[in-house]
Amino acid sequence: MSFTYSLPFENEKLLDGILFELKRRKEYELSQLLRGSRISIEEGGYSYYAGGGRHNAHAAYVTLYVNPMNIDILEDDTTKKLLTSICDTLIPAEVGFDVKSVSFSIDLTKDYELEDDLIIDLEKQSDRISGKILAKILPQDVKEKGYYMSEIYTYLYAVENSLRLFIEDVFKTKYGEDYFEKVTVPSALKRTLEQRINDAESKKWLSVRGESKLFYLDFKDLGTLISNNWDVFKDAFPSQEFILSKINEMADCRNLIAHNSLVNETERNVIKTYYNVILKQISQFLDS
Image 1 (cartoon, rainbow, N blue to C red):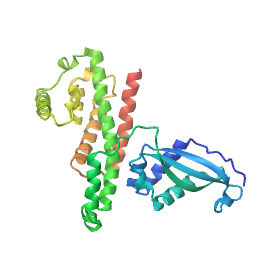
Image 2 (cartoon, one colour):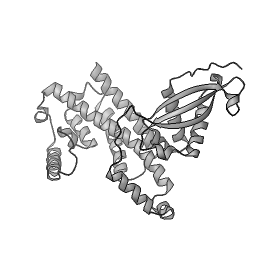
Image 3 (cartoon, rainbow, N blue to C red):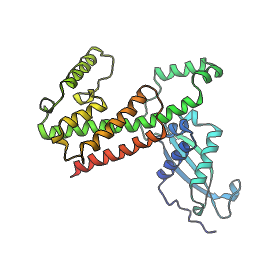
Image 4 (cartoon, rainbow, N blue to C red):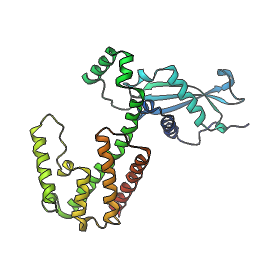
């Protein structure tokens, strides 16, 4: 068999494949540890002379450049063996690479926030708790569901804040910098907004939501704002039902997450679909 000795995709695509395969195998914790990492592949000599392999195939060595906070956790023989197997499976046979090992190195191209007192304290607390007790208060399925839910929250966070910034951009274009005094805001929502701002000012230890009043509004409040100012947004969306129904469904899912309830697979797929649909819709409007 003749080999190409060249990947048919960029290295980053291999990393995407690794993360996808880890999630498919429910290795959520490992996929989280590798998020944001980089990958390189070094081609070696003939695979046969490096521990055995296919005739004329070359040995390949994969290096993952990761957050320094994660490297000690990743430096595990079981983890390396799993990732080596996944890489070997994902690289097409006709390439002619037999993956011999996966190793980890610190990614020096990024600025990482190193350990702070909170992280150190958490590690100390974990050290004090016996494995038997830890298994009761933090069982594996809870950890896996936590990583699963964190991915869903990321989609919600992105689309919610993108929608806020979009609404602000549309209002500023229409009314100028002091737009909030000119848009239609229901009296009940005005009272809620004033209460949230007052609460934020009285609790200085909490992080500031932002200078814009829009950041004090909940997901469903954004839908209310669009609905009450539809003449401004009617060219951005096909209909009120199109955008409001999606906002309301995603807001319901957000409430589940906020109350530590599990979002099922169907709801997860709805969120991902709406995420793509809404961002595509508003980006097309801004480009037009």
